[in-house]
Length: 383
Figure (cartoon, rainbow, N blue to C red):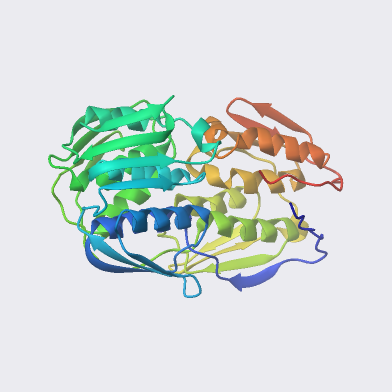
């Protein structure tokens, strides 16, 4: 494995930038375009392992998807909720969104489908999603509630289900994305507090953008009518807010200024809330319709904070990386669910910060990062 040397900077980082498209939006849009009737074009799309696995899977299912990576576009010939292939073997690597969303979507089809991934994906349980789909009439075989799966699809009737709120929000999003194409629609009740609410809100807003109606009560109960049609369209994908967080953080610790274009105050992605966390740490934040801007405090003198990162947990790694530069401890709370990602993110952060000479206190649901007078040179593992 090759190493990437990182050299310290000696001046404030400043500029106006564009970042690649959102992975979360790209994979949702690919599926919605596939379920729509007719051609859709996705502009500003992200090309990553997760989106390439989704693209390849849709093609195997008989949904023509044409990719132009240089132009950052996908063209999708939607089949109106039908998967022409009566049988397919789908390998989805370690792509969580593709695995969860396609597992639900395949139940709409007519045929036998196999879903698998890398060894780590075989350790990431999706039992809550499988249980809900089985309640709705799906016929699915699994190994220990993980992939590999065999799905014997005959359409999805619909009905009422319950989901744990502390399970992955991708399970709920998967059900919401396919609900309009069920026969009877879905009623979903959430048991306990709902984690990662911004991702669910993103899914609801995208359903509306693609022509489907839904309703909810305080994000604790959802109703989606069945037999709806998604509208094929030209769809512009927002820049990825999680990726933007790295540049905002660089401005914060160097006392610089970064503006990200085409990512504004009304963005679909909850991760734009990371700029507010930086605001608590002493940064100046500006929000426009088509931009977000962060200016770091003079000399990058950040304040220590205690913050609940449950809603924007994909930005935990960014916050932990700049936490050693704060003038006091940075306490990151309510993120137990990120232990079940592609790796145990809390343990990984703790281990790699210790390599740099940073004191970290790890908890089951979070960690506290203490100020470091000086960082040690180290080789960091990226998992």
